[in-house]
Amino acid sequence: MVAKEKIGQRGKTAEHFVEAVLKRWNGQAHFAYQRLADSRTARAYIAAQAADFLYFSKGKSGFIEVKSTTHPSRLTRAAVSQLPTLQKFSYAGAANIILVFHSELNVWRILYPGGLDSSVTSWDLREVPTFLSAEDALLSTEYFK
Image (cartoon, rainbow, N blue to C red; front, side):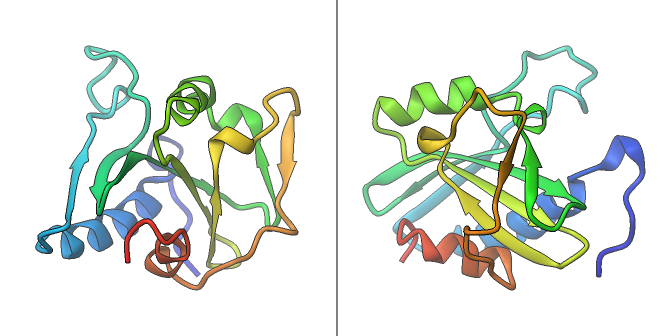
């Protein structure tokens, strides 16, 4: 189990797990990523970004947004403020991913923003497969093989 995060640091542990995977993959010829600036960290001097990371991998490209929740099977819609932007890019052909870390269970889930209902207050993720690592979850998309 991951140590409880302070209010201003929520989700940062999950982002670090994901960035460690992306950094390792970055040495491969078919993969590149960019960590996008965090508006909260920059104290709103920059506009909110579409996601945490931008990636390119074997002809696929898109955004990766990392979310962390203590709930074992739900993610609130309010936690994904970027959803309209991610959906717009998805509809235009980007292979976007929302990678959800369930910190109490220490498992990860992959969501595809283009298929999420934006009218709900939270999503029930019980039917979404879980993975033991961020890397396993990302590889399950087949965007990175």
